[in-house]
Each structure stands twice: as structure tokens, then as C-alpha cells.
Image (tube, rainbow, N blue to C red; front, top):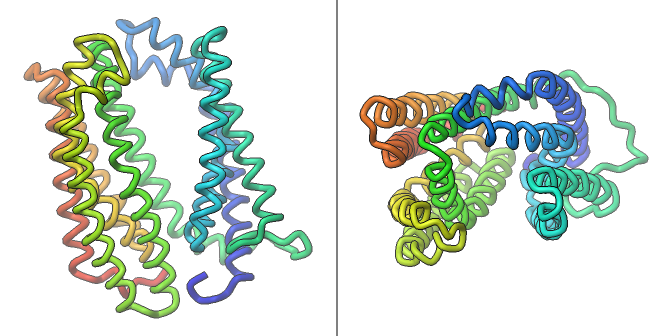
Length: 366
């Protein structure tokens, strides 16, 4: 898209959809075949009731996975091409639909209703994106009259970035699952408290997510057009905007930690722990800003292998490793997990910032 080759960009979208659909079907089938052992691996015998609920929810989610992957592929492609409005609008529609379906189904059906609501939302948003991809020609779209075909060379270019990105996500998601397993040993109250802190952190994180998407799009297109100085200026500008924004939002979250925690639970134990976690996350918000803006820059430039390696170092070596020691050996409880998470954020923010500062990403070939 940065090179101005719109026809090639459409063909790249088609290749990505072929791979996404094929891989998602394979992963769905394999995951359904091993769903119960996977769930039991992370919950253990002491949480059999929670494991049974998770198994039900997991199986319903898997049924909608191919639609979800197609949805992600189209929306990511549109953002990369510079159209952030259409993905936002469809995601907004999906969120409203999910809330309505949850309100209708969770009461009579419980966890099954929650699963059906989210799975139905995934199917609906994927179908909407597909229709818009053909009918609503904003920036990136497909044209039915054009003949798209399997192109090994173009698919190879996508895979050179896609495979390391897949490995990165596998590293990240398996690490998050391992963290859930560590938290599960502390009981359901600890899990609930952690979720309160994570949810509040996610709300504060939303502005930086939008800025990171914009940075990735801008840097990718500037490098594609050969405007290296513009790409570097874009990164500097995003950091100058992003870090103060995250600091401010972190301060607000810390200030209103108690009422925010009460939105999620009426359990005094969960509320007390949630308040502490929200305030600790608030201190880490500037680091999250650096992580997301710098990693977005490196992804746009094609330096995905470095992002993958640092994700493994930060998440597995520091977050999982330190949390395991502090929780299981030293008895620090949920705050041991928080210490491991904080060290992970600091390490990755430092590694990404140093990589961006050195500037090798400006001259990489995709």
C-alpha cells in the first residue's frame, strides 16, 4: 500500500485470507480434539467446578474460531492500509451485539449463554466485514470482477512476517495461560482480583492501542514509500504523545481505584486486592506505552523476529519465571505475580526502546 500498488495490496489481502481460513480450521479441529485435557492442565483437580465451566466455554469459542480469524485478518489488513474507521465501526457493532446477547442469554443459560453470545458475535462481525470488504470500497477491499489466485511468492512474503508473528503470539498466549495456571493455585478470589486489575489496565490501555495502530500504519507506509525520515519523525511524535497520555490515565486509575474495583465485585476480599492491583498497574502504564509504540514500529519495519525474541525473554523468563518462584516457593501470593509482571514490562520496554533508538529497523527489507 505504501508503494502505491493497490492491486497488489488486494492480492495480499486475498492470500492472507486463504492462509487464515486454512490454518484456523486445522487449529480448531486439533483444539476440539484435546479441549478437556488442555483445560484440566491449567485448572488442576482442586478447581474441578471451574474447569468444567471453562471446558464448556472453550468448546463454544472454538466453534467460532475460523470466523474470528477471518475477522482479525480483514480488520488488521484494513488498519495496515490506513482505514481505521471501518474496523472501529464493526467492532463497535460487535460489542453492542455481544452485550445484548449476554443480557438475554446468561440468565437462563449461564456460562453456555455467555459462550453462545460471544460466538454469535464473532460470526456476525466476520460476515459484516466480508460484506463491507466487497461493497464498501474505502481504502482496502476486494473486487469480485478481479481474478485472485494463489500466489506462492506473495504468500511467502506474508509468511516471512506472519510466521514470526505467529510464534510471538504463541509465546505470549501460552505465557498468559501459564500465568492463569499460577493464579488458579491461589483460588477463585485471587483470579477475580487479578481480572479486576487487568480490566482496568485494559481500559487505560485503549488510547495507546489506537496510537500504536496509527504508528504501525504510518511507519509501514512511510518506509514502503522510501520516506525514512518521516517514519522516524512519526515514531518520535507517537512517543511524545503516548507516554504523557499513559501517565495521566494511570494517575486517574490510581485515584479512582476503589470505585473502579467496586464495579466488578461486591466481595470485600476481591475489592481490597483489586484496588492494590489497579494502583500497581497504574504505575506501569508508561512502560506499556513504550512497549506498544516501539513494538508497533518494529513490526511495521519487518523486525518481527526481535519482537518475538524479546516477548519470550520478558514474558517467560521474567514474568512466568519470577512469578513462579515468588508465588509457589516464597508464598508472595497475588503480589508475587504483580512483581513478575512489572519486571517483564520494564525489561521489554527497555529492549524495545534501545532497538528503536539504534535505527536498524529503518533499512530492513520485507
